[in-house]
Image 1 (cartoon, rainbow, N blue to C red):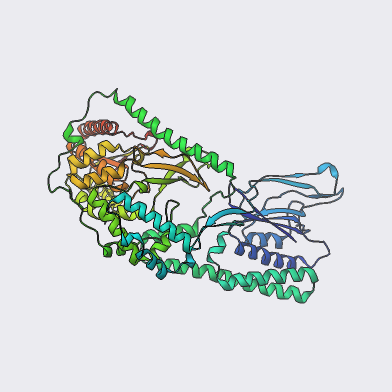
Image 2: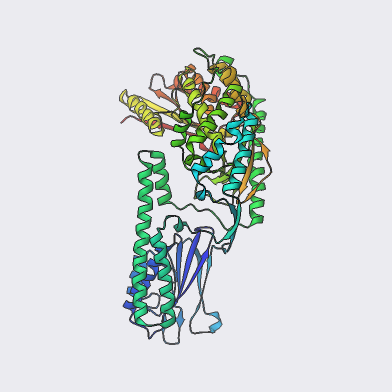
Length: 636
C-alpha cells in the first residue's frame, strides 16, 4: 500500500490519498476488506481532513459496473462513495470494474472519467479533477517562549521598573513607558526567536503525551513490519495502531470534556465550542507570500471603497429628499441626570475584569494576554493607573487606536474568491479592550436608563437577546390574533450599518439626547478620533488607513454606541403610533389591521417608513433593499 498526504483548498483544507494494489492471488476479499477498514479507520482518526482511496483492488462485482458486495459494504460503513461506475478492465470476452476511486467528500473529486488510453493496457485510465494545491512544506515565524517565563520574577522586575518607581503623570507618556518597559523585559526573559517548522496539524492541539508516544511507536512498528514482512511483526503493528486509535479518541474526548467544563454556564463559550466541534474552519493556509501581499491591498481598497461609495450614494440621495425631519425627532432632548464624570478605577476592579477575560491575543499586543493573566496582581495596578490617567484627562491612548483587520467569510457556503462575501473584523490591543470595558461599566447604566434609549432594542443589553426579541414579536402576533385582527410586519436591514456611523452625529446625539458632557464626552471624542487600521493576511499587513467613520465589529464600545446612535428610530415610530423593535441593525415595524382601520393603518405605516427613510439618509445610512421583507399574519 502506498500512502500520500496532500493539502488542498476549496471543499476541504487537507486530505489523504491511499493508493492500493491488491494482487489477485492475495488473501480472500473478506480478509482484505477487514484490513482496509482498519487502515481507513486509522487514517480518519489520525487526521481531521478528507480521504481518497484509489487503485486496482481486484474485487469485481456480480456485474461489469460494480465491485464486490463486501467491498461496497466496507465503503458504505466508512462513509466513502465509490465514484467509478463502469468497467475499468476490458477484454474481448469479459469486462470488470477492478479499479476504484472512492472518497468521503464527493465535492473534493469532480469529472471522473474512464478512458481506454489508446489500449496501452488491458486496464483503463481513470482521470479526475481534485481541488487541491500543495501545502507549503515549511513555515517561517517568530515567537517568544512565554511559557518559560517565571511569573513571580517577572512581577518583581515590573515592580522595580520605572512604571512603579517613576511613573509618568501624563497618559501617552505612561503608555510609552509601559511599552518600552514590557519590550525590554520580554527581550530579557523571552527573546524573539526565528523558527521554521511544517504546518501544525489540527489534531496536535489536543493529543495527550501518551497518544503522541503511541503514534511514534506505531510508526516504528509499521516500518519494521514493512522491512521484515513477517506475520509476527504485522500482528504487533496492528495491535499498536488499535491501541493508538483508542488513545487518540480518549485524548479528543478529554480535551473537549475539559473545554465544556471550563465553559460552565457561559452559553456564548458553549456555542462557540459546539461550533468548533461540529464545523471545520475552512481557512486556506496554502497562500503564498505574494498572494497574501496582494490580498492585503485588495481587501484594504475594497473595504475603503465600499464605505466611500455608500456614503456618496447617501449624499446623492439626500439632495433629492423633499424635506428634513424635525430636530426633536432626530435629536430628542435629554431629560434626567447628566453623565460628565468618570469614577476612579481600583486594582480590585481590574483584577475582576482580568479574571473573566478570555485567553485571546492579538497581533497588536505588546505582551501576550496569557502573561498578563498570569501576573494579574501587578498588571491590575498598572492598568488601574493607566485607566485613571485616561479618565482624568478625558483621553484615550493614541497608541491604542490602531487596529489589525482580519477579513472573515460571512457564510461558509459563499464563494471565497469574491471580496464582497467578507466582512472586516477588528483586532485590538488587549489592554485597550480592558480600558474600554472599564468605561463601559460606567457608561452603559446611564445610556440604558435614559428615556431616549430604545427600550425595544434587544441586542447588546443585559437580560436581552434574540430570544427575548422573538418572544416579544410572538406575544404581539398572538395578542393581535386573539383580537381577531391581522398584523402586518415589515423588516428593514441596513447596509454596513456599523461601519457608517458618522462620528460628528454620534457625538451630537450623545450630548443632546443622552446628556453626555464634560470629561466623559471628551473621552468618547478622543476614543473615536484618529483611529487607523490595516488589513492583515498571514504575516503581511496593508498600508495604514484612517477610520474616520464607523464603530466596527471588534470595538468593545461599538455595540452600545450604535444602539444609542439608532435610538431615535423608536421616537419616530412612536410618533406615528407604529410598533417597533430592534435587534442590532435589524428593525421590525408592525401594525394591527382590522376591516375598520385597514386603509388608515397602511397610510400610517407608509408615512412612518417615509420618515425612517429620511432619518437613515440624514444619519449617513442606507437600507438594504435585498433584505427588505413584509409579512401578513392571519388569525386562525
